[in-house]
Length: 227
Image (spheres, rainbow, N blue to C red):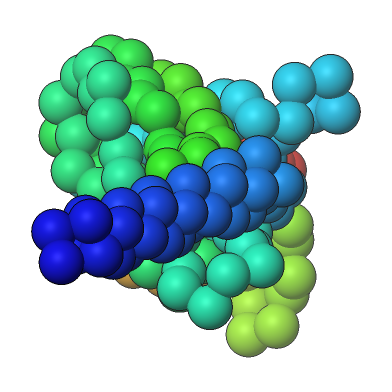
């Protein structure tokens, strides 16, 4: 009786051991044949280092970077940002990583995608954050004679903000018009084009500058016109 019981217990133990061994082999097989997620930046990189993103951004302006993450498993890879340096905030989802620098300097980090077997792929980013780039005033002055023979038009439509790609824009235009007899007319306006009629003939001096949405003014530019 005891011999039969011992034999049965031995058979059960052997079966359980076989199941464990078989399970380990299956796990090893799937793990060994698993590939890490495909994880790449969508643009913003160079061909020699496709996993590395380098850019410049304006502080307090959220910049979006697109990425592609794909995997063969039903469960999507787990995304995480680590090894961060610098003062910035971030969020990710729907194929986009959004970064907003809070102060000037360099921010960087590692962006990781990990699959259900713990295999991962990494992307890296290094971004230089700046406060502001001054605007540039560009304009032309013409004698138009629409309402009067001494009427001029000043057009500053070619002016631009140095950080327009990061959300910068021109908000104000300042015009300083000096007549041939040194009478000065000065105005600050949101209009990029104005007209002015002189009351006398001669050489007039036109000075102008522009202001961006950070409150910073460009350098003065000067033009002369004969009226």
